[in-house]
Length: 339
Ligand code: FAD
Ligand code: EPU
Image 1 (cartoon, rainbow, N blue to C red):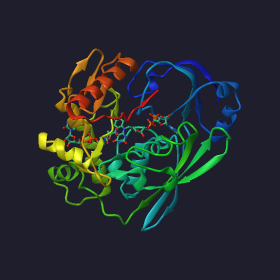
Image 2: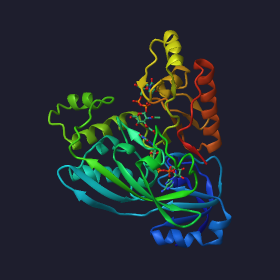
Image 3: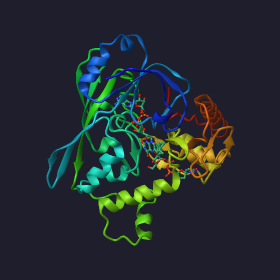
């Protein structure tokens, strides 16, 4: 375990922002977390835990210690006709876990979350989700390293306080824990879910009648690749904002004025409105602003055309928030973490 100094974070964030870290360390074994905790650099500096860097905007150089979690290992604890239980280390790549499951014919919904970038350790942070399934639907428990005491604590589903792109680790316990391992419980008896978005249509177009989890995974990958820019080609962090959940009476009023406004059901008393639609209506879709811009196929995705700084992207995000607020009276909230 070596603490490096003055390291470029450009290869470590999917926006491709060329910010630097004062200190940088990679953690390959659990005991290295204990060891790093004892160092003066750890004790006297701000810390940033890093997975795949696919949900963060580096607004400036990081004047502290970046801790890149590389812990590896997937173990199948149970696998019978009804369920599979998997123990997965935080540094495993999320999509590789999905492929591992699909290849073993283990579904239970994980197949709908194919191709989400990033690592397993970050997946509970914002309760990742796509195509009708969220982490909370397949989650059993996690183990996290308590930074202050160095102890390992276990959290079950209730204790994680999952919500839409939310968990206790983004709120009450922010900055207090490093997730080191997640246990998933996949219900193999659960019917496959093709109802969300264009999954069924994609399967129909390909003439697929025998709907397996492998076919669903392939369909989800194809849909995602048609809409979302590949960060290796065009820097981005997926949806930049959350889809706002507004009170039903506010939605009714807006709907009278904008009858085409799409909506989705969500928690009782609220309606979810796609932020991509709101942003597109404000004229941002496909706009280029300096080195940054709004993606031409998905208005919820802000992109880096190569040399954007985090500040430039932040400024664009604030301008978008302002225009959506003025036109619709809705305040968009960032999904991406500003560092
Ligand atoms: P990072 O960006 O490295 O970290 C994110 C946050 O979690 C940071 O605050 C970091 O400090 C913290 N963190 C990371 N690892 C740990 C750990 N082990 N312990 C404690 N804290 C930690 N998200 C979705 O939900 N659904 C999607 O469909 C989706 N599509 C995307 C598509 C694209 C093209 C991109 C680029 C992103 C997309 N995202 C999506 C966002 C992103 O993939 C997820 O948020 C993912 O879980 C981030 O993982 P990461 O390892 O890259 O996290
Ligand atoms: N829309 C537009 N214009 C756009 C984009 C979207 O009008 O430019 C409208 C359309 O009406 C469309 C609706 O928004 O039907 C929803 O769009 P889409 O299916 O592309 O999904 P999204 O709401 O934009 C959410 C998640 C994604 C996830 C997909 C699929 C959030 C913030 N985003 O996007 O997650 O992959 O659904 O489930 O909830 C992420 O979190 O980074 C992410 C990519």
